[in-house]
Amino acid sequence: MFDGVKERCLRLLSKALANALRTNSDIVAGNLSRCLPDILHKAMAEERFDIRAALQRRALAETAAFVEQAIPLYMGYKDRHALLEAALEVASAQGLFLEFGVYEGKTINFIAAHRTDVTV
Image (cartoon, rainbow, N blue to C red; front, side):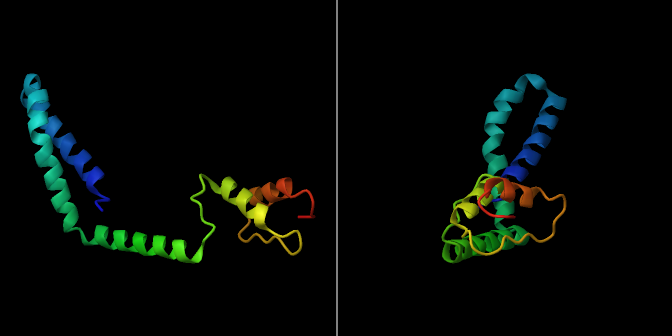
């Protein structure tokens, strides 16, 4: 729910630490444990009223719902090669392998290396 909390917390924490170190480094540990709840509360409050973050959360939720509904094979692959391997496993040997926007040919070479049963 709070996508930007981490960044806000880090920014506020950095400021608090810098201020504490400038004033008196001996009391940083004690003050830090007392000020962390306030820092987290402030970051979460800011996040609640961040319209851009709310729109991003909504877009992410809508995208996740679409993927869940329309792409039943989606498994959250760790990288593009894992996705390609899974796609190649279910691809028919009949038909075409098409690649659009070829830059260096890495994808088509990957496909060719893994589908030696057909001409790619």
